[in-house]
Length: 452
Image (cartoon, rainbow, N blue to C red; front, top):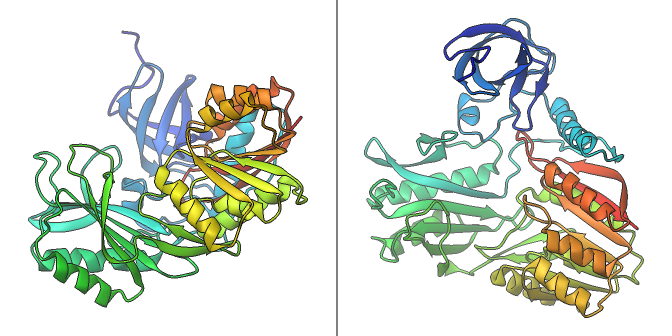
């Protein structure tokens, strides 16, 4: 095996030149990259090597020799250990520049000449998440809530999650204490025994309604009635308490079956003036304030006049479809999750929107069918998962040739790849607008319009 320039347990003084997309500092030793957790560009640091691979090594920050002007005091060690807030030591304006620069670098690599605008940030970049899914485990013989340490399944007890709505943090503690009071056991993944696996809480930013979901290995939870009564009394804004059954040996959080225990089987919230019903399994953006900024950008950039036919290819519960329907002639939504389509149809009815319809299906399959049928659209709106657009979807766009594709992306790497693929069909983009949906983390959302 070829010798690497650094060895495990070695300590080196290095200068950090860059940040990776995961927010780790990068230093080079004879051209060999050393990734250092918690180090920032421009800093001279003492790094302790923890792992040396053939092409790179990982190190922990042993000592700061010089400090970056962008460094701020981190809120708590736990947020770095669990990966909840991997950028908490980087000043917020520098976080916004980091996100803009990530897209710039990926475009350079892909030879794309697209202007990346400064990232739109938040006035208060914490306490923004409207949804929590926290693991429940036994720690020192007691049912405990918290978060896993990075790259492990060791639970770190936590009561304040920093980036979450503080009311959600409070709700988790109420549920935790009731489960303790009634002696309910926590799930043990090693032995696949125990009862409660996760507590999921959603809270409407405008409505302030709360949904509590207990994820359990069994329908038969001891003292369930008393627990439900206790939750609804302690948290009067609770609109829904649900029980989700997940008795499989899996890392997937939610099972397929859910029962209503209290109130509705949904919660309601508002977004850009429309009301949305959200069920436990539905996708709903977790940062409501920035979602409004993101969608506003998408709608403005689509330049809708009221005459357009729009296809929304990953429509979820209809948040962007129904917002666009107010500015377009008609909107056709496609979504793979049946519950989300049901919610979208219900949301259209709830808001009196008659020019939007929704079908269940895989975006690429439905697009292929529609293209084959000769259906036309003026705007195709895409907000795909991290893996980006399937090649079949890009091919279907190439068949349908809508004048405009509005691409909302949560992964700049697949965005750059997909733009390159769409260019083959004569599309080009002029600029990308990043929006910071996840402050203190490395996640990057953006809006790009491609035109023929």
